[in-house]
Every structure is written in C-alpha cells, then in structure tokens.
Image 1 (cartoon, rainbow, N blue to C red):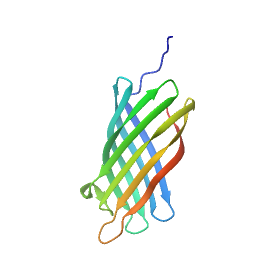
Image 2 (cartoon, rainbow, N blue to C red):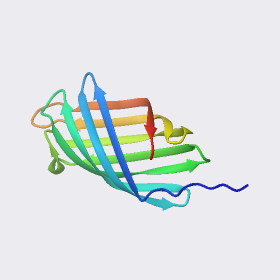
Image 3 (spheres, rainbow, N blue to C red):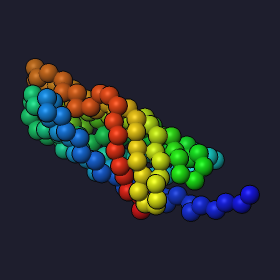
Length: 145
C-alpha cells in the first residue's frame, strides 16, 4: 500500500478565543516552528494573549510553550500542548497557564473536529482571585491551511 501526504509547513499560526461567564475571556494569536520527528510533529513557539478576567484588570500575556501531534492514519491525530507566561511577561495577571490534550479527526481538508480536555488559568494579581476560564472537556472545530 502506498500513501502520500503533504509535508508539514515549517511555520504554525494559530488563533483562539475562550470565554467563561464566571471567569472572563482570553484571546490569543500564536506563531510557532514545526519540527517533524518521525510520526510526530513538535511545535515550539509563543502566543500573544489578551486577557480580561472577571476579577482583576484586563491586560496581556506573552506565553511560550509548544505541543506535540501524533498522526495516526490520514485523518486522525492525537495532540497536546502547553503554554506559560510568568508575571514578568504578563500585565494585569500574575501568570497565564494553558494546557490542551485531545484528538482531532479531519472530516475533509481543511476542516477538523476536535475533542479533548482544556485548562486555562489566569492567576490573580494584587489580591484578585484566580480566574480559571477553562477546566474540563471540550468539543471544537478547526481549519488548517
């Protein structure tokens, strides 16, 4: 059996928005470098994030991190990623922490359905409480170009 697939582009660009009625919003744009490692694709990079916690001041975070994808067949992937921003790279919050793990199924290129677990926390600053925007299972969709 022969199969062919397009090589992964050297750069990864991402965008996301998360909202919690109880804890606020976070929106980000990311840029990363893709590194093929056999059946895996590693990505290292950073994200610029706008934060608007319910308790605390709106601000920003410059997070660094990366992820790992494992392609299984032509349309299924397992993935995980983690990004962190300390107080020195954040404004309005003490720190930013984001982690995702899940599976992705490509229905037809470029559309995919994702399901997994997501955690996103904005650590409180100046006596404000932490705002956990996401901490649980999720279902989403994405487009890859």
